[in-house]
Image 1: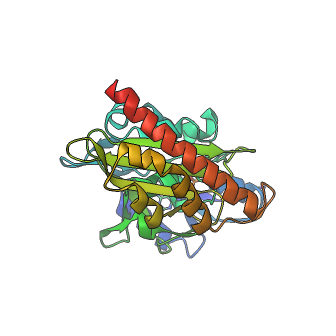
Image 2: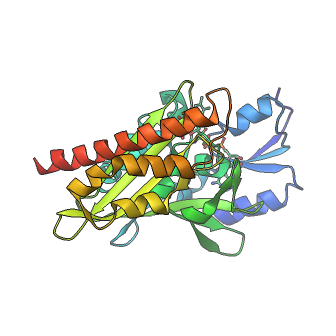
Amino acid sequence: MITPLTIVTPASEREAFEAYQGGAGSAAYYAGGTELLLLMKQGVAQHDVLIDLKGIVSLSGISRAGADRVRVGSCVKHREIERSPLLGDLLPLLPTVERHVANVRVRNAGTLGGNLCFAEPHSDMTLVTLLLDGEIGVFDGKATRTIPAGEFFVGAYETAMQPGDLLCHVDFPVPRAGTVFGYQQFRLHERPSCVVGVVLQPTKDGKGCRRAAVGEGAAGLAPRRSPAAEALLENVSWEEAAGRAAEVGRVLAEEAEPLEDLTGSEEYKRHLIDVLAQRAISETLGRREANNA
Ligand SMILES: Cc1cc2nc3c(=O)[nH]c(=O)nc-3n(C[C@H](O)[C@H](O)[C@H](O)COP(=O)(O)OP(=O)(O)OC[C@H]3O[C@@H](n4cnc5c(N)ncnc54)[C@H](O)[C@@H]3O)c2cc1C
């Protein structure tokens, strides 16, 4: 049961930060509340002050940030990402994956910022943000600093943010035209127990792959990219990339640190990562062929 508490509705990032500092260690930010309120109902977390971020205009919206970036505000809901024509055009991996996040009720309330801050190990959006080289804007009361996604996800429920830090937005670099992706999930419950994603950027002449992002999540404590698996797919023709799928799967599975739990043993999860990686590569290359047809 949730005990009586005060809800504060700041109008700016600074007001939110000050409300947090004024909460004497018992305040928490909340956006959709889909994670936080559950924890409070279960008695796992208790807060006397909740700071509702949804009224802060600067935390909302999806827009271009200069010529080569798209900015997604921290309070943007999953459903808005799923339906955004701008993201559908420039970063289709985001809306494609969002369609499979949770259920419509959670997607209508839960936000990207809440998902990344909570860093639940079975999150899809943490891996997607990592694969897309997201740059996370965090306000610390004085200034907004940028944390690359590669440094943001530290462990289960653990990020590089300090207490009181406010996640403001995520900037995603727009990938080169012709970039293709694949994303594979395995789930037994509401949240996935294993996910693998692949993003391949073409060379200038379009005949091969110049840059690759390959990673897995949900099986261990935090999402991970694999530079070794990525190297196998970089600066090769599309045919060579297809021929290396099995090796990529093996490398990704070997490097992973899956945890045994109710959804499977460590060995089983390594097998899943291997299979999903091969499927994700074939999905990626299939998209390229469909685009070129
Ligand atoms: C049934 C269910 C199924 C789900 N399935 C999936 C799934 O398949 N894939 C997936 O990726 N996710 C899944 N999720 C997770 C879901 O995406 C998150 O619950 C949601 O995005 C959290 O956002 P929120 O706005 O509700 O966060 P809140 O609950 O409001 O906040 C979560 C945490 O983040 C902090 N916080 C929130 N916003 C900020 C901010 N701007 N700055 C600093 N701290 C902040 C809060 O203090 C709190 O600690 C599922 C959740 C549920 C309940």
